[in-house]
Length: 338
Image (cartoon, helix red, strand yellow):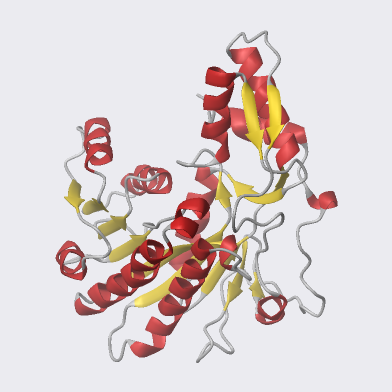
């Protein structure tokens, strides 16, 4: 039986790309109700129009900065998925305290509301940019991760299970490069590329959702689940998108590529874990599990691999990059350009 059958679920940031994919998946598990919590009124209207046939979805306008509103939204809720964040690196660099209020203080508000309402599970979505952060976005997400882990041993007698999932770029998500490149090709016949040799961890929305649900189902409390993701070279991504767009949209003009360099706070390579995290991690087929700093020793998880992590975790390597054929298949199969 599904973990979510006849249960009440709150998706914070539910109008975003991941939130919408999560909603679609969870509806297949026959939940009692799903509450969509976000501050984007227009996105909520659009989502409501798409799901008029479903009478078990509720739409709540609110902001994670408002603890009282969050607490009301969590009344009688079993499971919370915290997806809301300020995530654009340049915007967070230019407005750092705004990022703190949403990503850090907002996450603490989620924790407080969950404890007050005796929610069963809270899962927080983090990012690979939280590793050795060089920008405000990564630093605030790392702090939020630590708050979620700390909540596990600061919750007192409350039985809420808090955990985090750390992953990279989700293909086709709002503000990601695929929609941007598509728009640039159609409007300007040129693409702006930060660095052709940049390597990024990427996954499709469906891959992200399945691993989020897997992590939530096996969490014991305080863990950070680091999802295993394919590595993509930005030059390959640009070439595939240009080729597909020219073919499908009958574009005959040459598409120019402008290399603009790294943006403020941006890395050439991302990382999944630090060396120290890798040494203490527990590995399964789909993910690494970082136990909480207190009380996490000796835990066993379903599907755990007996591997001794005695070597250093490398940064993304060019030999680990997926092929252009695989990349093209993912983009086309997920309809990320249409």
